[in-house]
Image (tube, rainbow, N blue to C red):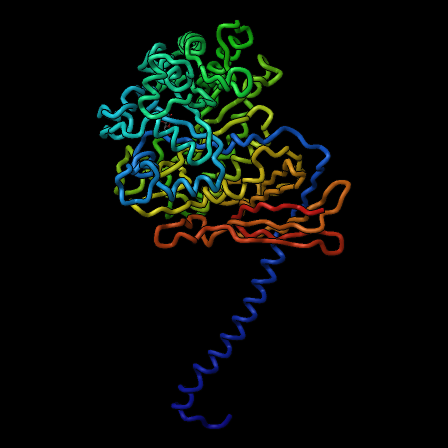
Length: 542
Ligand code: AHR
């Protein structure tokens, strides 16, 4: 071995190490790449488009907007004098974003707020200033009332789902509200509506008869609520001439808020009575509320969490399926023809309020986990589309699992918003059964299906497929088989992010946004690799 001065040794050693390191890195990357390719789980999906089933009602993609925190004020309403661009006081940016996801209906004014809402406070030039005892005890200016709500839904192209006050109001008050909104006859209430700027009747497509009447809506027993329901259903009439034969207003009764005897008794009481109902009362829907919360009070963080919390929340959200099955079984007993819809008019993730926010305002972030959660729930609703014909995510703007977050003039669209956008082709499409072996994703003792999928045929005959890869670490390679045909290509969009808790912020609004994907069949096989923790919607070309 030649003599090498120590200075050279010092100089050469790092170079030698750098080379070694580079080779080592390349070898490692190759191993890692082939490992990730090898571990991309193969999932075969088989679709039979000739077996299309129930219509996936567009109303499954409905929204809920309550007078709560910044859901209405700042989120929708900024007032006509605001420097934020608006049309008659309603934010233009929010309207444009909501039009783009074709919101079918908006449930308003609550929630718990609805059972303390007195509609007269929200009409006319002089608005009563009241309080919002449910949500932080803040001032309710009532500047957003009936006319502003109707203007808003008209601007976004949605229908009205109005919840009437059964808790602290009267039948008389609710009946007057409906007459005020819907009559075309020259009654005193019609003239008052015309004087307030709208002579033509409004359309009220859906009527919620109370909200959580077993809790914030009056703590009623099932029997007591049933008596209320019958009377309200009879007296609260819709007079809109265009809704007398076709397009009748659908009446939605308060239903269960969970699983177990308390809730099965509630549903049993209402549905048993419905089976024997007389001409003088009727319902078209039974509501169900189910939040993904794991434990009460909500303590899961909406951002800054890890894989364990990701898996725990998704596990909890999948419970929606058994809840629907439990309630549907009771409904089937009394209503085998499925005339009464199960309306899941409050659903979504409910986390700990963001630090520094008013706890009564239910402010939380919205991450990649929420996008997966939304897709899983929408898929569950679609699988039960024969009974579940309406759902309203809680809540549309700035509250709970929101589509949109605003701060003064700023607005950002959440990962959940993008899921609703990607699912547009499923609105009113016919459910197509898809079979697959979901496999499992396991973490920290929690086992979840690795993938989830639904398919549907749109009115124009196009075939659509959605696949969710729940596994946050491994990609999934899907192979699509069409019964009696061969899929030639597929194209669409995929939504994923670097981390399970990645969010869109005002500074980085495009962190979690869909990107295009496409594939062509090779050797008669149509395959596509889905990224970890992703939601993908594809149209299939035959
Ligand atoms: O969405 C927030 C609240 O949750 C609603 O006001 C109430 O109906 C439910 O308990």
